[in-house]
Length: 151
Image (cartoon, rainbow, N blue to C red; front, side, top):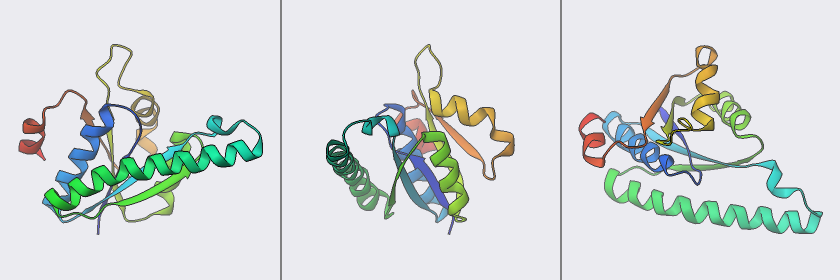
């Protein structure tokens, strides 16, 4: 079964990427894998504090994921998978793609700010020619209605 890999982070554009991935998976008989990455700089503290911060970050990610998972189960009849990794975001995305051969498409949300589409889109599209799977970039300003009509 083809998996749509989407990154869960604190950006506004990730909402559209998750929504689009769920719609496409529902329409094509696929599934969704949601990847959340905890950057290493969050744990540059004493070891006890770092362990507590890591646990809190995981709890926050799992709570955030459950909101999207409930929507996908109820509305799209898809049971998404959550993967949490620690490290540099681009490196961890590429490693997840390498480790899971069922991932068929990476779905990213593009920001609408003047500074550009966001760091993940910028960094991953630079090397898009050497990626083993296609990338779908979902505009951050795309309406729900328009998204549903094209997904």
